[in-house]
Length: 336
Ligand SMILES: Nc1ncnc2c1ncn2[C@@H]1O[C@H](COP(=O)(O)OP(=O)(O)OP(=O)(O)O)[C@@H](O)[C@H]1O
Image (cartoon, rainbow, N blue to C red; front, side):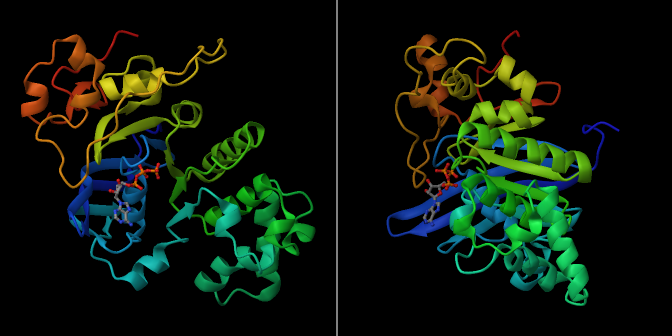
């Protein structure tokens, strides 16, 4: 069975999250539809402030006040979570979906030994597990994520481990209860390049061994290309393009995706003298423009002599090729 045939583990439709602020209401996530199939790694990519983290927090039932989900549906294995009570969500976290944070060093408790922290999920969800078996499982998972001499590591405190080893511990905590879905929030940004590659390899191994689905949140297209099957490109609270990674990276349909890709140094090639950054900044989420939210920064629009549709009419997310969608009045998948 290919990933494309597999059933959806996560189905999100019309997800909308707002923050009521002094100066108005910021619609940080606006009508987001997405799904993640069994065993699939889906990347969510976009600049800072595009709504990736708020989307991820909404899936986990962790949107901080004054934010709240105002519309939409979040279904995990067919079960609607949007109106689930906090207690129910807490019991799902870890067991059915788990978060791997961006900075394990900050997320781990500095005064608790690694073994104790890794065992917390087991104690919460499987309190009846005999002590020896619990200990065995802790050492087993630490070994599986590549920590040498797990019994020694289990006795250590977080500050005694390197950043890469701390991140492995975070992966161990995430996968320990065999969740259907892992949500990885920029899990490699705090690490150097070699260690980044090891953590990405580890996530691929987790998927290989356990068939876990992964929603991978990042601002980095290179990481998406390395690890993901499909990608969702977010801009100003909306998905502006989605599709298989290879297709999107080789023939982007949306001008924003093209701009993101232009900012990436070519693989194996000489890096350009200066990376292209996207000029301008995203609009204010308290007052989204009526037309395309990317219009003011769009090179395609400029090259076409600024057609009026771009600023007068909001473009819908439409199918542009098999399995591919784009939100642009003038979208066409480029020829590969
Ligand atoms: N606690 C908050 N209070 C008010 N507004 C918030 C809060 N958190 C997020 N927002 C709003 O949500 C928008 C999206 O933020 P979000 O953190 O999801 O972006 P992001 O794409 O994850 O960026 P980054 O890559 O920097 O984490 C922000 O521009 C801001 O308007």
